Image (cartoon, rainbow, N blue to C red):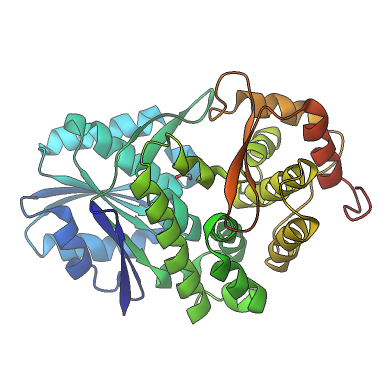
Length: 366
Ligand code: GLY
């Protein structure tokens, strides 16, 4: 059984199990009636699924160019994008042909970017196989590659023609990646869906069971939150910013740690920091902050960061590409499901929140 989450009126996200065992019926309608050629971009870990997709499309008479890319951010380079553009050119891809991104967030970011730029935009269908890919990266049309100066600095908003989330793919995902992906699920809970938080609180281990029904409901709810936000504000002119909850401090942690932390781990600490900042600014009560720590810790996510790194973190935050002008902006909560903004907070407040997050005992550091 699968659930269809519409993203405004423009495309659907199909969430279910067994979808990649027989991918043709879900994928083909998303590729468009006039498609003749498909570029299938995938990572090595999902080679089996890629073979099934290739066979299903070839059986319908489509020309499938199948390309394996390196794992993780290493795939998001201009050189690899250029190699894929060359594939499209050699095979004669036209405006009615399509690209499929199969794998983690890096695969869907890269495939989306290549689709966005080929002939000024051809269809992309995203098939995320990681939790963070399903609930975040593949939904919403952000695509991009990295440069030597930073992550996702070159990119385009290019909504997919459809997204297919086969929850069975999560059965083979490393546990640490499942846990890290849960940070984005919880983020959607804090900004917009109290039921998500209640499900995790009721049984965190059930939430992390890749074969169990709780994870299915969490993914469906999370996709629905993301879909509602991006349908209302594709280009992040205002509302979409709430999806950056925990990301200002989180991106700084990723930079300072030279990307050795998983994104979700950094976002978990970032949400704890944002919650402390909101408390110090008189916006969120102490129980709201404690709830962040309880939920994140119950899932095995970090909520603290070592002391003594404030200068580096502060510099990284001011360089974040989401900073506008020289003023730091944070998404903060005025309550669960009540996101707001904190613009240009006092330096003393920023540092005080860091001191709590880096304290060995945050309950006495207030
Ligand atoms: N990951 C945040 C967004 O898609 O806007």
